[in-house]
Amino acid sequence: TLTMTFLALLMFSGFVTGCTGNSSDSLPPRLLLVSFDGFRADYLQNYEFPHLQNFIKEGVLVEHVKNVFITKTFPNHYSIVTGLYEESHGIVANSMYDSVTKKYFSDSNDKDPFWWNEAVPIWVTNQLQENRSSAAAMWPGTDVRIHNTTPSYFMNYSPSVTFKERLNNITAWLSTSNPPVTFATLYWEEPDASGHKYGPDDKENMPRVLKEVDDHIGVLVQKLKMSGLWESLNVIITSDHGMSQCSESRLINLDLCIDRSDYSLIDLTPVAAILPKINITEVYDKLKNCSPHMNVYLKEDIPNRFNYQHNDRIQPIVLVADEGWTIVRNKSLSKLGDHGYDNSLPAMHPFLAAHGPAFHRGYKQSTMDIVDIYPMMCHILGLKPQPNNGTLGHTKCLLVDQWCIHLPEAIGIVIGALLVLTTLTCLVILMQNRLSAPRPFSRLQLQDDDDDPLIE
Ligand SMILES: [Zn+2]
Image 1 (tube, rainbow, N blue to C red):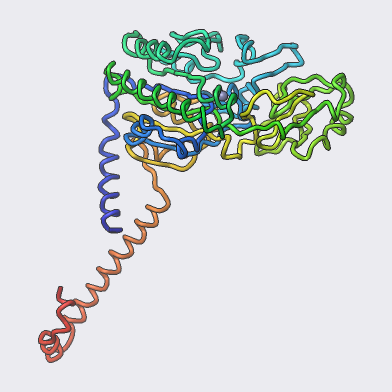
Image 2 (image 1 turned 60 degrees about the horizontal axis):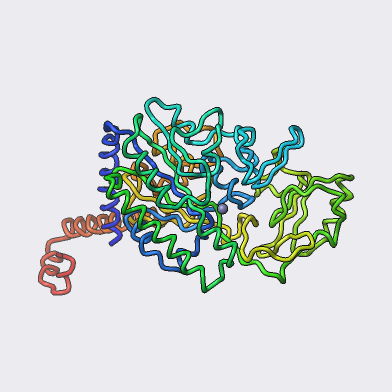
């Protein structure tokens, strides 16, 4: 079978190189990027998603996407569309403060381009190409004039707009627009909203919520098929972060450690952003032993692996709660699930699935980084990417026009090749021995029954 794999791979590589020239047809490639907020990677293993599984069966799946710290909604959605870590794209939290301009940012006060202009999202880059437009049925930042540009078609954010309404807009824009919409986004608030409310461990409501999410995916695929978009459109379904269970018994009360007048609180939990009003060291000393379930960092000591340091919007002191712990100020627990924790925690990771002419069919990969989505999308759309932290190579195995070798197959190829060579060498040696052997022996051998296998 190894030889078969070897031969199949040889044929396949020929097939791939033979096909790469065919993609430059009349219509440019098109891509729909979908996010179901707070879709934890292991929901896919622990619940049934018949529609999503059908989508994956004909496409690709990345089981864990390592997202960026802090693992919150706005920062990660902006990393998906820019390929940048938070310190580089500037959306470092859902709640921010800029001490130079004295501006505040929150998820309900996000329309000032000032916050977004440190990066160029892909829908802007896409529209700078000749004869292309972008569309957004919501996605953080798509209703903001970033670098003086919104998508040609977009909706102002409103959580009360139904999924069907968003989907109808997207399919209409993809079907009829001129210049054609080649990049589009679709955003949905679940399962995040219910994950916060009930907690991800909830067994009563979460199964229903996740079934509704899967039904939405079913409706999405059906609608794309009915609109004649399904075969030619590339679709990515992914998310921004996962969810962890919180508890009344896992609270960290800052009021027990420090006076409120000593600092301004910019963001609270599970990553608190602290702007001291008194001496920084004094505030740090009061907080550093506040709880064994919370790491306290001076900005300059934030671990490199977070890529969360070099931006003015990151406050002088950052507190990071352990998984499942909630930072409060003399208040009871308000939600049973939360995210924002360390991005190395599996429960914080989302997944990625994709389908369409750019993607393989039935291929599975265990992991990638969330910043790798951007260079992959640029590659599919034929856009020159902005400088970014992602690596196209990490997604090569997902793409039909890329040549990639997986380690197990590479080993298979080597072993297969060695087996073929060894067999051939042995045969050649045997043949030579036979030909060069003295006649009497040769005759004897031919009469010998034991020799039969050798003749074969
Ligand atoms: Zn989110």
